[in-house]
Length: 121
Picture (tube, rainbow, N blue to C red):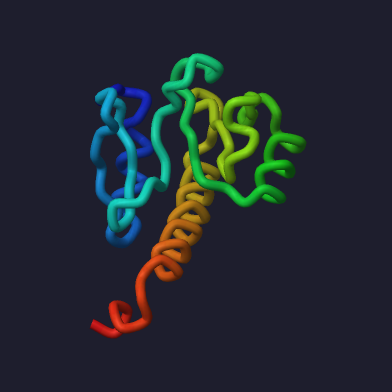
């Protein structure tokens, strides 16, 4: 795994039920119950050492507007509830907040996906 992902791995693994795995291309990702939470961007439109993180569309717009040196989008990622994060620019506290929000979004999606009986097990 790449050195740029080390801090992401450390922060992400502090959240409940998060696992580090790899995508089909060998790039590292964080998942919760098998669902994508964050990972290194691999699309050619993204800059090197960019993290892709789940983010609500309103939050994403605010992040990009408030700190465009850290957060950005490309046309490829624009239609998804994601934000691109330059790992060299993001502060550890901000990374923790981003991953926490992504974790909540991912676990909420997982709860919607499961039948109600599965939640009681």
